[in-house]
Length: 223
Image 1 (cartoon, rainbow, N blue to C red):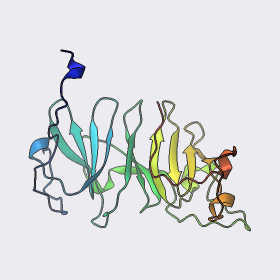
Image 2 (tube, helix red, strand yellow; image 1 turned 135 degrees about the vertical axis):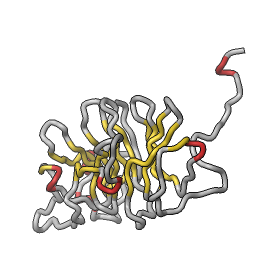
Image 3 (cartoon, one colour; image 1 turned 180 degrees about the horizontal axis):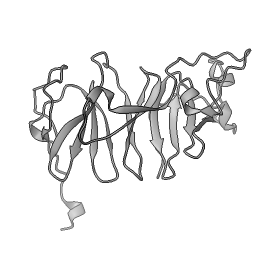
Image 4 (spheres, helix red, strand yellow; image 1 turned 30 degrees about the horizontal axis):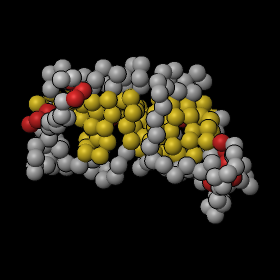
């Protein structure tokens, strides 16, 4: 009998059945994953070394497969009752979070000796301002500008290639951050077609990338 022919088996990685933690996580600490309570896990990503990051409402946990331990590495405020999006760099394994509440993409600073869980991040993309469409005054919300000067409308899923380029969904567009010059450029979709909500694309034609409107929330690319 081949191993591939054996029945699939499921086991609990983290959490206790029918038990949830308090949203106030001041008592959260490193512990055995199977003995750690979760509140509302909605996001998950795996790093290149097998480390698993779990988005659990206002807490991001880091699961260490070598010892079965889990610990909090980032804490949001208690208003984070929505889904945010996680991804890791396939080369260095660092965690990135796409956060539409902040209208920013942030990056985890460290996983050891964390002094303050609420401050353990740095801003990668976004000035925190809402991207307002204004073609008359040529407001592009930061296209072709430095990442720190870019305004986002609704950042969702993100993915990173082996060169460090970050691709992310923002509203109905896909934008990218080039690691070479720290500039954000538009990849798929455009403001012109984003505001034309009634426009329908035919399945029998070929369109340029700027004419496509993105409705998906998540995507990925091969490293």
